[in-house]
Image: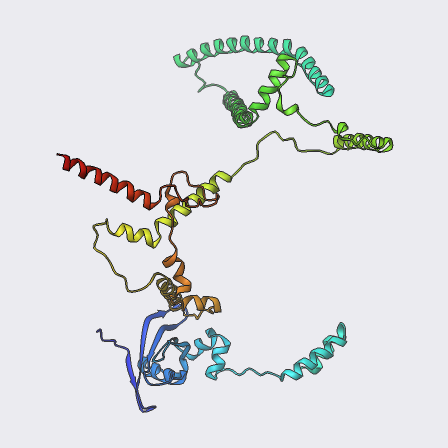
Length: 144
Length: 310
């Protein structure tokens, strides 16, 4: 039974504890980040939310929580263990440059403004009636 | 045919006119070469002996000499290259022709034979075609005329339409496929569980008992493969429903039934096995078990009787 250096026990949040273990650790110099596979052991507990895992990883690697991105968590059949991936960036700037938009939105670093679906469809139908330069004018006018 | 003959005659005429000229030229070439080599030998001797020293001479003439020499050298090189190239080209052409000749061997031989004999042999199989005119129904005169005119038309049309001549044989791959099927069937019987059990008796290796069934192993292997891929590339692959089901496969009678219950025959291991032919039914022979037993007992009884006689 080998002692894993990166081994953190969580408590307080729930009745039973959960263990976060990292595997396949790799420092990606090209993308200025550390990437790893995360194993979470949580017997008698539902799947641990990503925010919790994020905090624990930040503590393990002595960084702030906003540069840690975790994703792809899948719980094994029967429960008790989930596996996912985590990326820890050197700085927030790099993170904003490199991470895909949806993950930044999840973290709350990016806001995507989306008009209502109904409005979008109405706009499209209005544009269908116009042709050529009139269409371009209409697009500019209706665009917020 | 007539045109070809005419062309041949024309080319042969030109050849006939050019031939004496060519021969004369060759003779000239030979004599000139001899003269040239003679003079060159003399010159070479002189130069070796050092009689022609041009250090104190006119530099312009020296330049002329040198340029002449280089010109000659380059010219010789060019002619050599040209000759060489011609040779190589001719050789390549000949080599390419050889396989074609092999393919057309039969046709060529036949044509040569006809040309030599002057008469087509009576039992030439390719000339045996049906006579279309005789297939006409003899019910109506008009119909007959129509049919004959149609036949004429098709003849003309045929002459205009280009039909690919069936000179070479088309490649037939049936043999290879048959062999493959045979091989497959052979492998299938050899790797069947029945034969494996039978062979287990005769090997001296220790018997290994695996925990998992074969099919489950496959599922486990697949899952492991996927896992490795995902962890390597830090990406979650979308697994289709079918693949998911395949990964979660359990060994049931439905999946493994054929192996358990199927009694493979050893036919595939025979030398003359034909996978496409229908499987031979096991025939009930005249000798049933009853008669065999009777025969056996007879022999034994007989023997015993003999013993008693002693």
